[in-house]
Image (cartoon, rainbow, N blue to C red; front, top):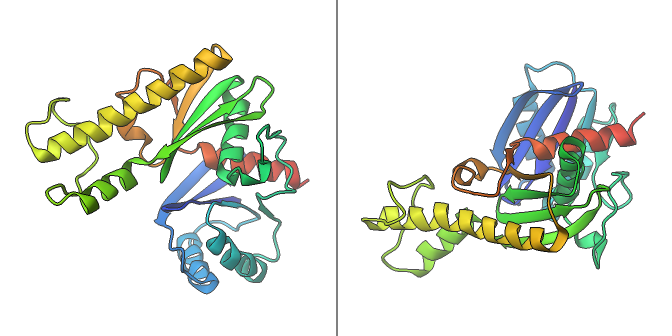
Length: 252
């Protein structure tokens, strides 16, 4: 079985593949100061009753975590092929930006998975710590995109800076017109971020023309997709699928 690991700023997602089928996945908190040994214990706890792992592929947007993971992978997974998505790894995705090395590994694997499934041009909307809109060409090239503050960190910043506002659950309120503080914050989060995505997607389409799909992924995608007018598909495991494709390109 192939273990795919997506280390994000807020959450780490692990998935187990048998062939092309994702048979199990977990979402855990990313602890930027965790040691390699601590992460090894977490991995082993999750995988304890699973079938034998025959390969591992990983991408990370947190440099400190990746620094701790490298020796851990060498110690605990040295008998199986390990692929880390970084400069020099074969992805098959040309990166047409000013500085390709600045592009996050998760955005590259999302590009690969989206083009594999939907063709192009298409747009990937990843609702994570930041809200990323990634533009994929008809040839599968990464053209660039837009980055905006994510839903959770925006609400956290608001509650930290405004004395009478507080953290709320991100769910759809009864109406866009909030009748209390909680519903007013939920309206701004759900309808506001849906409108933000729709506005950015419309501007991108004005520039590149019609697209085959606008694909939503990420932990908070399910909250927004019902209110968005431009999102056409939802794939919560898009990054894991992209990691599997990268592994297949690098391991015979």
